[in-house]
Image 1 (cartoon, rainbow, N blue to C red):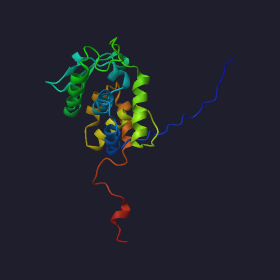
Image 2: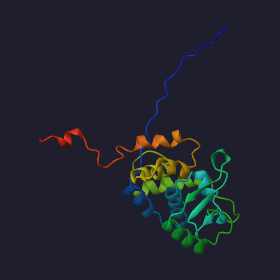
Image 3: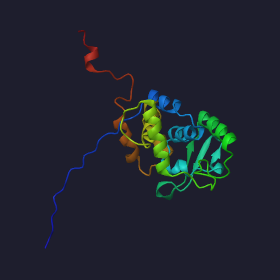
Image 4: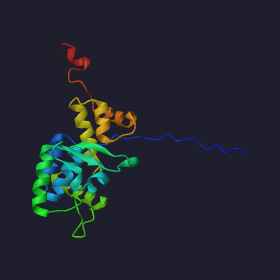
Length: 193
């Protein structure tokens, strides 16, 4: 006997991408230096939340301006970019907290903060900034990739920075950018109306 199940179409909704202005508003409303540094690192390097909360001091290379991301998705290591602005905030935060292992520890025990705590930090900041767009903390990673594409960064380079195994995963960001080439105009714009 052969069992046949009906197939269903999977609907895929595009995420709501935060603009550069919204990212700026979000970061400006955060008063806590640890929280600001966390969200700044996630956005500036395009990290997954799990990658950011498991970041250790030894993973920050200020000479090469990289973050060593260890055992990320699929157990792979990679290097992510370290923004000079993010580094500045990390140094200010370090002077204040003097963390010794994990960059974003939960408490004195030294264990890293949880992903749900990071998500709550993001949601509070989003609410304070008056941002109404849907989405959780992963929206910072989406914004990183989209803003890189809008700036003209090569898709293959973005793939490596995000740690994607397949270019197909990265190519979906092409759908988030309404037009990639600023010289592309609507045909209506060439009419004399």
